[in-house]
Image (cartoon, rainbow, N blue to C red; front, side, top):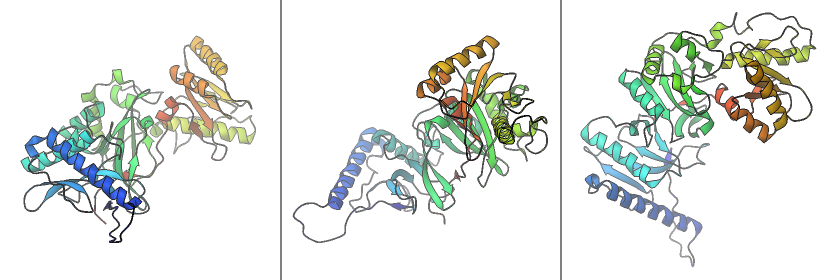
Amino acid sequence: MHVTDDTTGSGASVGFPTSDMLAAAGNFFMHQGLGERFRTRHPDLADRLQTPNSPAQYLSVPLTRGQSVALAQVRFDKPYDHTPVWAVVGPRISEPPRIWWGTTKTDVLVDALHARAVAELEGSGEQSPWRWDEPAPCEVVALADELAARGADVVMAVAQNRCRAVKVDRGTRAEYFERERGDFLVVRGLGCLITVSHKPLSGWIADVRADEGGGSRRLDLGGLLFGEPSVVPGVEASRVDRGRLAGLVAILTRLPRVPTVEDRLVGQGDLPAQRSRVAPPERSVLVENAARELARMGFADVAPDNTCTRLESGTFRTEWWNRSKSMGLGDMQRLFGVAAVEGRRLLVVSESSATRHALAFADQAKAFVFAIDPGSHRPYACNDLAREVVLDRSSWAPARGLLDR
């Protein structure tokens, strides 16, 4: 990871500024503007602030014993050096990188620098929400505060600031977490990382994975909180008391093995019951794979029917769409109407596609729409609601040090 330096270092005379010279000038004036904004918003540290007039521009607040806190634009080492981000750095280089997306507003950046500098000068911890690299309070920030007060090791909280440094196979990179992941936090357990997410459409969801990375496994959050196993991924936000959720997660961090929805399946990943196969082998594989993956997401009562040609559920009206044409808005509305008459929710698994208007209606109707990947024979999410409940298959882990090698 290195500080951006766009100057040429050349003494050659030119008749018109080169692109490198213009970039260096823009970099200089940008940092000067940041410095002026810092002094305006935070007069208590205005006299301390330094803006070195050097090729590598940064804002610095000196502390004691030659230490300082700095705000700088940085790039991670190759091959992840294509995206510049803002970082609040120092004085301890062994801590996780504190980064903000390149388009973060000036006021947020200078406030983050100020919060860190004040905490270092006063010898106290950073105040919330800045301690979580967030500019404003929210549900996930409040949950992170409650967990920290209970002694849990919260390593990441993501809400308005969607940019974090993560560890990947070939080093450290800046990761931008899309809004569909919701606001979330990551807390360290015994050999595992527990992620608790607050999703716009599906409420609270919790997952666990091994500390060294790898795929996630879903927790039955409803069952753990209320003692009644859930059949749908997620728990409505209105049902969840934050203090009770924090207490549960704190307990989970101390367990040698965190219970997941897969523990409800018979054997090691088998389906709840053996089914007789009447369908052709390829169709049976599609249906059984879909049922297995949906069960791992938290759709507890979704299983193949006796013929292995479609899915059945007591909670959902399930539709296996195997027509050649895309599912349109009229099709989705008709299926939703049938489900509503039955007093059930709608779950669609399609072997083709669906139109944008059909998927938008599915989100409004709180219906899940998945399609089958022809290569892996696994379902993937089509609408926003379904995307909220898929399991994370990425291999990133929270970065542990800015300059550690």
